[in-house]
Image (cartoon, rainbow, N blue to C red):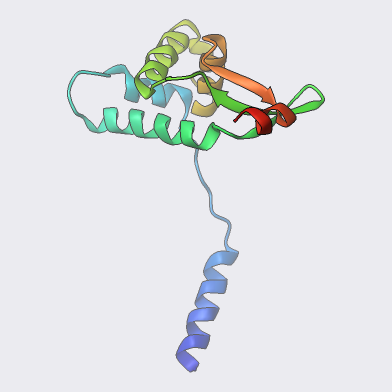
Length: 128
């Protein structure tokens, strides 16, 4: 019983401290993705892993657009490699965004390339 109480106290104390998470910047992601296709490197893994995770976390998300909620969907058959290519092209043309979060850069790149669609929530539940 004392052991359980000690574990509980340690857990509560550990969870009471704020956890700081630093986001990867658009410039850092650009750097990781720049050597795309030039061998299996840690940078390639970070690039593809980040973007795949970002895609998985973004699809189906509801976001406000104007005064309506919309659901995010990628166009059919969009691949991670395609998003990497679009992202690099966009970031090369917009170096002023390199200090923003990678999420910011990815959203602007895929929206600009029309690889994503925003469907009003009511319609999305009927079509997807």
